[in-house]
Each structure stands twice: as structure tokens, then as C-alpha cells.
Image (cartoon, rainbow, N blue to C red):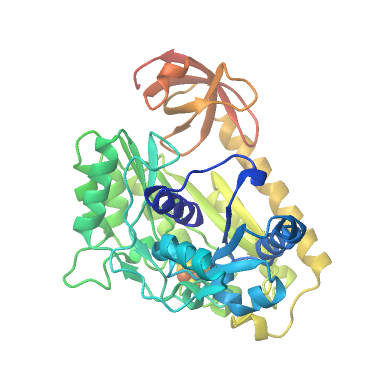
Length: 430
Ligand code: SF4
């Protein structure tokens, strides 16, 4: 979501006449789009902001702004701590950024905007203003009503607000007309899309309608909450040809006791049943997950339950996070906060196990011919292209730059835990 927010900010500034530069020394405006989900992300952002102090002393004309979740959480504290920060733009004020910059230029700032109403349908952008020609993120909904005990999203981004289906579809049609072939629908809790809209239009209906857009080749959606993933979703993935066989559905823990403390609303058994239903409907589906390691009160036994869930599901990809206390969450006040060394040790063990599983999963692909959407040259070797399978695996193969944005066939020859290498066999899909 932060990536999309940055894209939308960039697009509205370009529409307002701003140009982007590659070197900070050339900039008149420096904006940080921040995340508060983990303490580490905030610490890094604060350190980057602090590092600009000397630069701003030499260039007092430069406007520095902080946007997004950390801006929403800290508000005026940011300008008190860093007087060179002249804009604080909260999560609902993004669409107003061009006007906010103009105000800060005119008045010298600071301009602090935290309590805006997000426009009903979110900011629209000029379809051409996006970083990738072939793939694009599209916001289907913002905010979340789930209140997981460790999460700051509901308090910083507000309650769930779904965009009207016709707005989402109109934006995707414009992106496809401009060359996008892969769309990823975004929402903090995408499976509950539509619940706040009149009628009974749901994510399954949206997938159906977007799937029908001519010219679109692939459709993805993230992030799925196990408790909200309805029975029509596995069927939609199985039936709709453009919907990719990939689902990011974080379990967060394998222990029922911890899931309850986290307020996740499902049990380990329910999660496994859901995985079974998904695999019955779509046998080749790739599942991605998130785990939080070291949630307050997590015993060794609870941790082993996470380890065994990771082994049982055999995720194609897993994001493993060390628990970090977030201000204002319920988990902040919970007893039995674990020492850092215990969290680090458990995190390492889980990482190692996931690496082993990922390598085995990747090795099983050797010899298979897969459909890859060619994305562009790799950073180190321009003669090599990178692309993604429908299951969201990254594949590296030799090919010409003209293949970018095309579906090609690649035979898998070699793998590592993070990358898969293959040989181009056909410049059209298998
Ligand atoms: S569902 Fe996701 S965004 Fe919503 S509260 Fe839980 S972790 Fe946060």
C-alpha cells in the first residue's frame, strides 16, 4: 500500500507541474512516505529525516515533508523534534499534497494535516504516471476494521472504505488502455471488499468484472485475511483465467492461544481447513504467509506450533517478522513481553526452516515449463531478464529487452531459495 501511495503522490505532483530529480542536491522538495507497522521502519525513517538537518541549514529553501502512517501517528511531534520538517501529511491527506506543498512554500510552514476525510474513491491518477509500464497496483479499499492486537493500521488509516466498483474498473480500463497487462488489487483486508458498500457486491464479483476487461492478462489481489476469505474466492481463482494462482494469506501464528491474544478471529484448525479448500479448488496454488515471532506471552510450545504450521503448509514464500511493540496497540499493554534475544533466536530458526522449504519447492520446479511475464533486465546483467510466474515466483532468464510486458515460456533449470533460473523456450506462453 505504501508503494501505491508513493506512486499516487508522485502522480499528483507531476500533474501539478513538479519534475523528479535523481540527486538529493538538486531537489527543492523532499518527501518521506513512511510506515509505522514495525518499529524498525520508523527508526530508519527518523534517522533519514534527522540526517537532512545539516543539508537544510545550507539550503533553507528546501521543503522537507513527512507523509503516511508515521506522520499520522506523531503529528506535530515531528516538527518539534525536527524543525526542518515543514510538512506533516497524514494518511488521509495524501490527495491534497500538491496544495499542501504550495501552502508550505507560501507560508514557510509547518503545515500539519491529519484529520482530512479521504475522498470517497481515493485519488485518481493519470494512467501514464506509474513506474512500471506493464504492471500496476490499484487500490480497491483503504483502512481496516479488524483491530488485530499488534497492529496500528486501524487507528492510523481509519475504518474500512471500499471504492465503488465502477471507479476501480474505470481505473483498470484506463491502465490497460495505456499498456498495463498485470493488475494487483490492493486492500489491507481485501477479502472484506464491498462489505461497507450498499448491496452485496463482494471481492468475488470485482474479480469477475475485472477478469472480463479485454487486454488484461493477469490479475492478483492482496492481502487476504483467513477469517474473511469467503467460499466464492477459491472458486473465482479456479474459474477466472486471468486471476493468478497465488494468495498471500498470513497466519501470523500457529498457536490457538496466541491467535486469540492477537484477536485474529480464527484457529489453527480453521486455517488448515481453508488451505485444504484452496488446494482442492486450485491444486497448484502458491501460498504466501506472514508470521510474527515473539508476540507477548509466546511460549516455546506456542512457537513450535508456528514452526509446525510453516512445515505443514509449505508456503511458497513467507515474511517472518520479529514482534515489535507499537504504541497505542493492545499488545503494547500485554504482560510477558519477550526479551529480544529469545525473539531473535526463534526468528532465526523459522527463517532457516522457511529457506529449506523454499529451496525444496523451487527444486521441484526444475524441468517444468512455466508461463512468465517478462518484466525487464536484471540490475547486474542487462542481457538477463527477470519476470514472474503466475504463482509469483521470480524467474531469471536470458532474453531480449523487446520481450518486456509479454508472456513467454521458460524451462526451469536451476534454483536457489530466492531465485529461479530458466531458459527461454518460446516467446509466447505455454
Ligand atoms: S487485518 Fe491486517 S491491517 Fe487489519 S488490523 Fe489485522 S494486521 Fe492490521
